[in-house]
Figure 1 (spheres, rainbow, N blue to C red):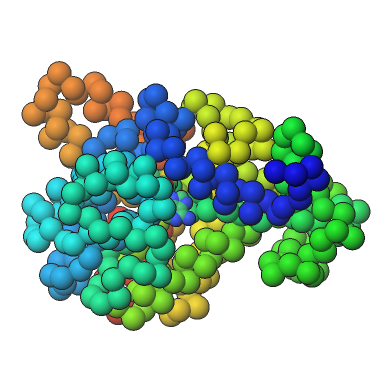
Figure 2 (tube, rainbow, N blue to C red):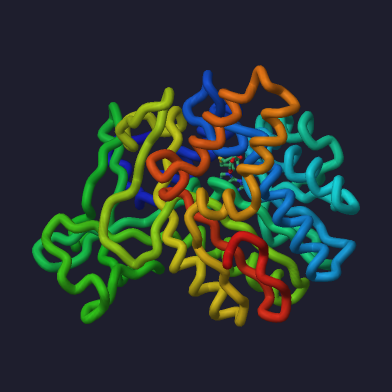
Length: 344
Ligand code: SAH
């Protein structure tokens, strides 16, 4: 990397995360962070129940299970085992760019078929799409308000390390970019100096592809992530390493870079495709509606020595002070297909 290299934040984030996930040792107690399916089998089981119920009510027997960024394959393994109790096991398509994680996913779900990008997944038959903590890993752009105008946030390499910088209007003007900051007269008009606006064009592009597929092929997409219903101002870029927060610019490739998901931005893509949007609802509310309490009770009766641990896992997933409220679940279906369980 040469001195004075200056790249937009989204390019920095895309490159850093590609190198980070290529390592493959990022999840779990000994990794950097723990996701819901790694906390408890009950999470994937509730996803499986939701999909099996939806598939039955939609009158579909042949549908492909598609998961975006399946991590260690734990969610798919738990969901598919649950679906098998209620009907056929669907064919499995995983969208994953990390070779190291593909190897772990193959151990969990040996019959899966892998794709690099969403636009290459099977183009016939209905799709049962799952994305848990996938969209938060996709690159964002940021703009910062400086003396009344929006300036693009960049990453600059000074020869020793990367730093966050704000583009001077003369180096990169928003108008010269394909992505635009909030327009004058829009929702962000009362932004003060220093305010930050975010967008994730990469997430919108993935959502465009998913929605075109759902409109043409039918099916359901379950999007589960931490986020908000925007638009809103604020800096949500964060880096996680060893279960704690780090400077997002300090060690690209060694920390997990994420941003909160704007569910409204994803919903507006679905709306443009004429699809029905369900939620987003808080993860805790959704899991309870699907019966995680009954499942926890049944598992505790089968394994009394694990009852306390199971209760603790459920609490982590549903409690508003843990993952229950920050994490949200949004579903998208074709308007002529059923509403998935947990959204009414
Ligand atoms: N869903 C899993 C893992 C979440 S981490 C869980 O809940 O445990 C993000 C996942 O998305 C990883 O598997 C990562 O390798 C994958 N990923 C990140 N960016 C991607 C991209 N642009 N295309 C495909 N997969 C990507």
